[in-house]
Structures are given as C-alpha cells and as structure tokens.
Figure 1 (cartoon, rainbow, N blue to C red):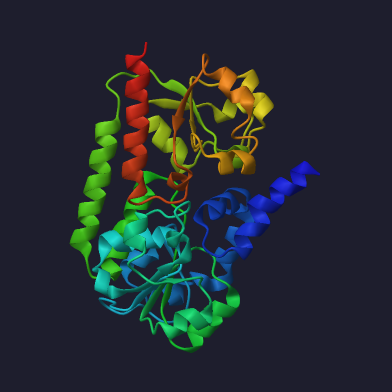
Figure 2 (figure 1 turned 90 degrees about the horizontal axis):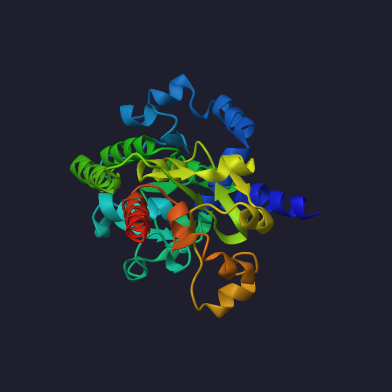
Length: 330
C-alpha cells in the first residue's frame, strides 16, 4: 500500500497541480512514454515549427502551447510557472510582468526572494485569471490544463511551455532562447555567463569525488541523468543513489540510508522547525541525530531542486562551500 501512495505523489499529483516544477521532474523521469506520445501528437509538427523563431525549434527547451506565435518584445507577460518567474526576474523589465505563479508567493516554494515576488500579483493559472490580465504572452510549465490551453488559443494568446532542463547546458540553451523571445538577448548572455562562472568557481582542484546524496522531504532522491546529479559531479561529489538501486527520481527509505550512509547528505532539514518535524517524520527521525558521527548533513533547500536557471548559481555555491568545509574538517 505504501508503494501506491508514493506513485500517487510522483505521477498523479503533477498532472493536477499545474506548475509545481519539482513534481514535473518526477513525471518526466517516470513517464517517458507519455512524453513521447505528446511529442508525436503534433505539438512540434514541422508546419508549426515554421511559424516559430529558430530558438524554439529545440524540443528540449520549449514546446508550443497555442497556435499563436509569441509577439516581438512582449510587454504584458503572465507566468504560471515558478521556474519561469525566476527567469523573468533576470530576463525582462519588471514593468513587462503582469503576474507570476502563486507558488512564488509561498516562502517554502519560491525560487526567487519572497520580498521580490510579493511586488507582483500572482495567479493560480486558471483561464479566467490569465485572461483578466490581458497578456500578450503566457509562460507555463510542460503541462497546462487542456481547458486553459484551449481558452487561451481561442482568444489568440501566445503560450510557450518550458521543458524541464536535465543538464546545465540545456538550462543555458533555454535561457538563450527565452531571452531572444523576450527581446533581451544580452540579459540571457549575462545570466549564462554568471552560471558558468559560478560552476567554474565551484569545481574542486582535486579529483577526489566525495560520496554524497541529496535526500529531501519524503525520502526523495535525484539519481543519475538528472540535473542535481550533474551538479554534484561538477562540484566534486559522487552521487551514491545508484548504490541503493535507485532510478532517476526515487524514494530512499530511511532504513537503507542508515545502513549505508554517504559521507555527506544534502537535505532540506530545518533546524528547530517543530512544525516541519511533525509534518515529515522521515526527514526528522531521531535516528539521523545518531548518524552525525558518520556523515555530514549539509542544509540544501528543497526549492533548489525545483528549477534550473538562476537557482544553479546558489546550488553550486552551496555544494562547493559544503565540500570545502568537509575538507577543512579532515
């Protein structure tokens, strides 16, 4: 019974909660056949691609939401995706943003500073809310409610849907393409340069890969062929998920973690948060306190698993700092 509960969280909920990017990561990892079906359904048909800028021809970066081509230099943008919110903060002027995703107004889910997010109105992504904003461009995640998509198409609103980047390079291609659409290629180049610089700075001088694991709420672990896996490798860690027999995105029971702990555990444990302890018994189980002499637990905010883009800079900095601290302690 417990396994079905996990599947429900990883597969069903993302299809109902439109824009929760981390859960879309799980859908992408576990539903490759569904993705291939969508690809074959005509969204990226050759005729449609001819209507789009060249930047949108990369199916790994964008998919088309409506039959309407995006305007040049859009000035009334509505985002219904928290990862798009973070990108818009870097790639366009605030005056061009009509609304952002309601996730960005949640301190636990936002990928941008909450004070910055609260300067903008937020929408839950319904067609009625979006239409009321009178957008000339809507930016969404890979999944948009069919009814919302049809309504926006009928009203002639352009929609682009961001894919889930599975590598740093793919994220940077997405940034370049989106900045072209927004009429701000220089901003895109600047953000990509900052990401490249942060990762270069985070690379260790030695080739000693430290056994590590990212283990977050509910026991969720990003495995091989994921963006967090690449970040671990780039910053001098060896993702130990394979040693537990885990796939791309999987659940690691506490018993297995205790039996074979990694050298360092990146987790979103919040020290002193009694409410969080009550909500997530696995993450705050007393047995973890007894492992402190065997492993180092480094705080890694769960929101850093939600998006790529600007989040890569903070993620690389945190991982590099944790590795340096670990080395100094030896």
